[in-house]
Image 1: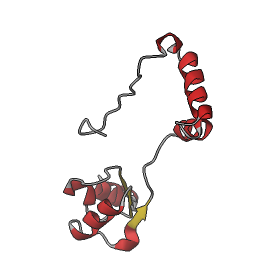
Image 2: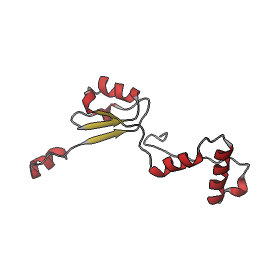
Image 3: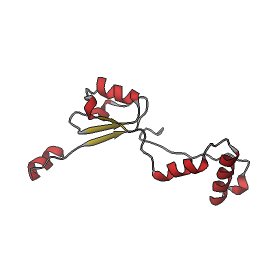
Length: 117
């Protein structure tokens, strides 16, 4: 697609890759020709450089991209094991209609491309 866009418009199409894996990643993440590769960990940066031959100047250590709301909730909660943190968790459970299950643990299930992200 990139070569067709360049040929049809005369303008280069920049390609950026965001790899959210932390410890290991498939080699396909490290395709040659990207303008920037955003990685979440030192381990992935090293894999990109060694396995994918991506030059260091094209790699951006960005951490994991998260939705702003997750960051806000984390800041509001503070220390999750403090009295204030536990009180905040109780208020969120009530807001979500889970207050009646105060002695039941709640699990947030999320998935990624391999079902584990």
